[in-house]
Image 1 (cartoon, rainbow, N blue to C red):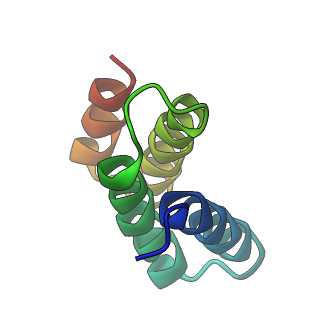
Image 2 (cartoon, rainbow, N blue to C red; image 1 turned 30 degrees about the vertical axis):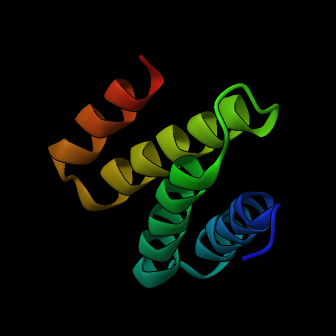
Length: 82
């Protein structure tokens, strides 16, 4: 695959998050979370994108919690940041 695939996935996940905020489609938010997790699995340790990707995932999980009320999203958002 592409060596910077994780950067592209991070960008796509962010766009899906933006789309969710505009349209309110849960599928966009869910897909964004999936892509952020994939970003983290592909991102090399120590890469400059890693802290941003962790923050993005935590934020998207928090938004999913506030939108859907599923407590595990809130717990996951806190665990990912630790």
